[in-house]
Every structure is written in C-alpha cells, then in structure tokens.
Image (cartoon, rainbow, N blue to C red; front, side, top):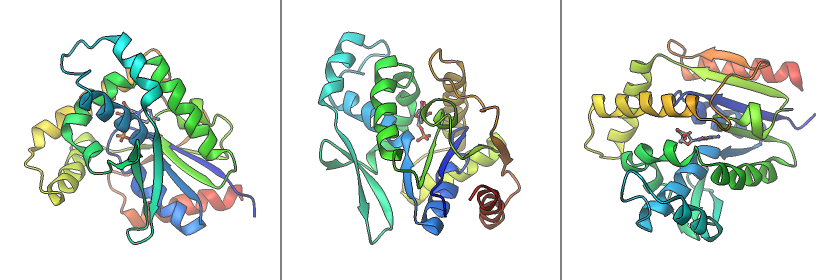
Length: 227
Ligand code: C5P
C-alpha cells in the first residue's frame, strides 16, 4: 500500500488535529502539528522578552531564530507527540491564550515561515504523514496525495475550544476565546506570505454538525480512494 502524504488545513479550532491524529493512528502514519511549531517560536520570543511591546523589533526576532530548536517526542503513554523547545517540553505552555494572542503576528514573518516550512518538509519527506496547519496543501506539500480543508461555524468552534481549555483548568470565557479565533483567522487569511486559503484540489469538510466518528469515516473513505 502506498504511503500517502495527507495535508489538513483550515480555520482555527476546527478540530484539524483531532481528525489528523485519529487518521495517523489508524494508518500508522506520523502526525505533525505545524501550528505547534509557530506556537513554540512565539513562546520562545515571549520568554526572551522580545514581544513585550505590541511592536517588537524585527532585528531581535531574526537574531533569535537560529537559537530555536524544535523537536517532537512521542509519549507512548499518552500516544501523542509532545512539542519540545530547546529540549524542554512546552506542550502545555504553547496552548495558552497568551501564546494564541501573539502567534498569528509571528506567523506573518517570512524568515519564521522559511525555517518552519523546511522542518515540516523534512518531517514529511518519507511519506506516511498527516500534517495539519494553514498552508500545508498550498505551500508545504503542494503535491500531497490528499488535501482536506476543514471548517465549522465560529460559535461551535469557540465552544469546542472553550471545553478543551476548561479541562485544563483555565479560567477563560466564551467571548475572549471567540475573539481570539476570529482575529487569528483574519490575520492568517490576510497575510502576504502563505495566507490561509483553500487549495484548489482540497476536499472541503464542514464539521459543524458532524460527529468525530462520522468525520473519521468520511476521511477514511477519501483515503481509500487514493491508496
Ligand atoms: O494550528 P494552530 O491553531 O495551533 O496554529 C496556531 C497559529 O499558527 C495559527 O493561527 C497561524 O497563525 C499559525 N500557523 C501558520 N501556518 C501553519 C500552522 C499554523 O501560520 N501551517
């Protein structure tokens, strides 16, 4: 059986990683969360005090980039890959609202994207990979075997994200989370380099009213056609 490259793009908090992880597990593929990379870079810059002001110094960002090493370490107990920043597990920290509020701004920077796209392409080189993000089907793997573009109504996305954050004991409210999703989508769609757009050959899935199982079966069917 052919080892496919599967690209999953779409808006913030559409459940891209949920479906990507389920598919990777089922097929024995590698799952790569490209958003985690942008989040890890953002966290590093925040920790260095480089993003204290809204208007950061580009010079400082560019100087910091070579010092950022991102890896993924598979945790066999949790059955997930965890994000490592310079050897430290940052899986929880990168999901904070503080990081979510700065990440889209950092993702507009050309040099940041170049560094991370290179890493993404390396991780997917051998095939048998499911990668999710915003530009996977358009820029990272334009020749992917299967491209999905996931969407859902914004209030449904907000509820899902809120639930996820509350499970981690964050004191957080609906409006803050919704505003962050809307704002990130706006910045991600309007940036000059690799904006969030649907690849022409992507299959669009609106999962607003789709259960995880129904979506999983739908995607497995699409994969079968490609194998
Ligand atoms: O997927 P996630 O929501 O964790 O991504 C966080 C942010 O990282 C996005 O809002 C976007 O700004 C950026 N990103 C990107 N390109 C990708 C993946 C994520 O610009 N391929």
